[in-house]
Length: 135
Image 1 (cartoon, rainbow, N blue to C red):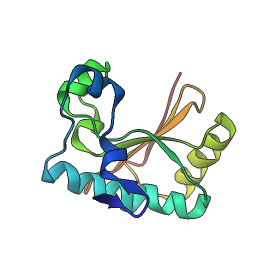
Image 2 (cartoon, rainbow, N blue to C red):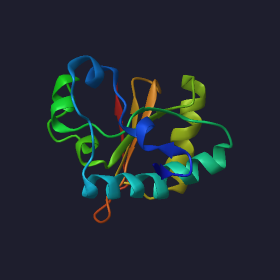
Image 3 (spheres, helix red, strand yellow):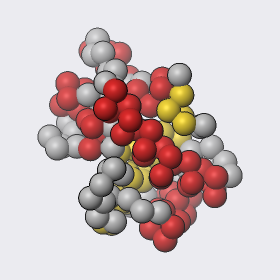
């Protein structure tokens, strides 16, 4: 099953931590719909522009997995509304961030740890187009 053209369900839910701890990291239908929206409105337009594969570091994390990895208690990953991505280098991640900021409608766009990865989230309504830096 695919979330979108370039994201498989397995890629969106796999986690070494979940595998190690025996956590079943499967989204429900609402979370799957949210994931499809993130893919359709954020990831796929970015991927089309970039023209090369983009690695997914983290997409869906259920509450148990989110707690195990030390995620924020209100993390949008737990709702399937956020994706962490990387193009393989800080320089390339900056390109992704800058393009998203100029071209996409999103809830949050976060430069994490000097472009170590980029976090982008999308909600069906109430998107804030907020950009943040976490260092």
